[in-house]
Length: 94
Image (cartoon, rainbow, N blue to C red; front, side):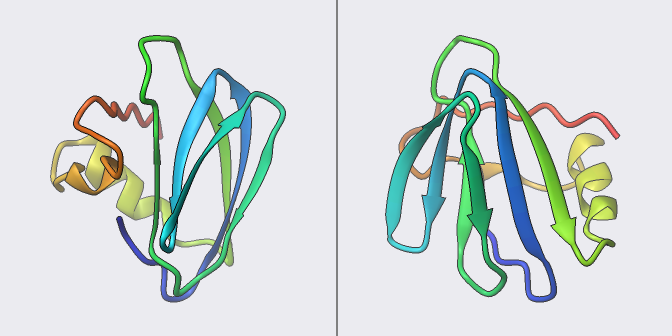
């Protein structure tokens, strides 16, 4: 799990089902579901299946995208993506 101190995160599931952890709650979000992840609340998201998952993510205000570039280059652990188990996968294209 991770926390954004300055940004709210908005997700739209385009394909597949995302597993979401928000605070002490976890839930699945199917395609066409919009999710609001407010700043200062621990959260994570990932794909707990072998099916493709495509998510559109917007953080406001901007600036957090540099952290995604670091993750995409393998410069940061993604272990926070596993609130359910260890099968979560992350693919970030910046």
